[in-house]
Image 1: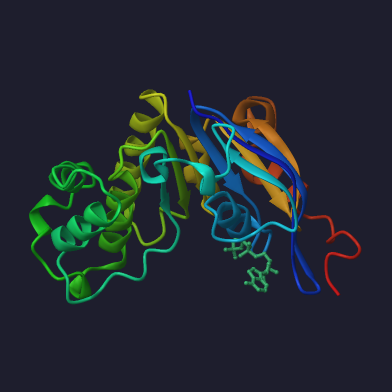
Image 2: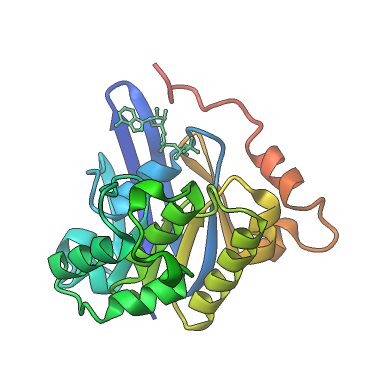
Amino acid sequence: MTDVSITGLTKRFGPVTAVRDAGFTASPGVTGFLGPNGAGKTTVLRILLGLVRPTAGEALIDGVRYADLRHPRRVVGALLEATGFHPGRTARDHLTIAARLAALPVARVGQVLDDVGLAADAHRRVGGYSLGMRQRLGLAAALLGDPQVLILDEPANGLDPAGMAWLRGLLRDLADQGRTVIVSSHVLAEVAQTVDRVVVLHAGTVRFAGTLDELAGPGTGGLETAFLRLTSEPRLEGSRP
Ligand SMILES: Nc1ncnc2c1ncn2[C@@H]1O[C@H](COP(=O)(O)OP(=O)(O)OP(=O)(O)O)[C@@H](O)[C@H]1O
């Protein structure tokens, strides 16, 4: 069982405080990571992945920082932005190179292409892929190391309705396998159908962390109402210059 724990996390970019004393824990299951544009979600996820250094606080995976994991790609898979694929390379080549670079078995490539429904298009150049297909390729790359933890920043971006339904099933399967999945999204109706737990960030501060039922279960106004209530307050003083 692999937990993600964020404690006292603060990140300042010059005069902008992107994340302010944020804390939450994500355990096996799907945790929806919600917040308005600019709330600080991507910054938290990038800190978790060792891509951004926090000003204060910690982001730990299984008790250690990403940088201190012995085999990070076997523990954590990430989808941040589905860009950066070489347009002239096929999906299979892209994943094969990624596997080699991360010292992962190349035999995983066929498996993850199947998992994300790209097997039939694996020989095509990524430059000709639609946005949804690039998202699937990004997910395939995240799954390469068969990781216990998945960090997915807006994976539903660009997916059509069938793709959204497929993603929902994939996230459920990953959770049922005991993995810890953190997924950011702005599509609340989708989130309401997919996640077990919710973290709501606003102006860099955690406004709610708990189960979906606690926030938006029967007898409440639903997820959108709760989200708007939690994120309607003005930014805290000092979060901007
Ligand atoms: N490298 C950076 N330099 C300066 N400011 C940054 C940097 N990265 C993020 N920020 C600022 O930090 C704040 C939080 O941004 P972040 O991208 O984490 O939000 P987000 O919740 O992911 O937003 P969105 O939903 O729009 O993707 C914003 O004010 C943003 O402009």
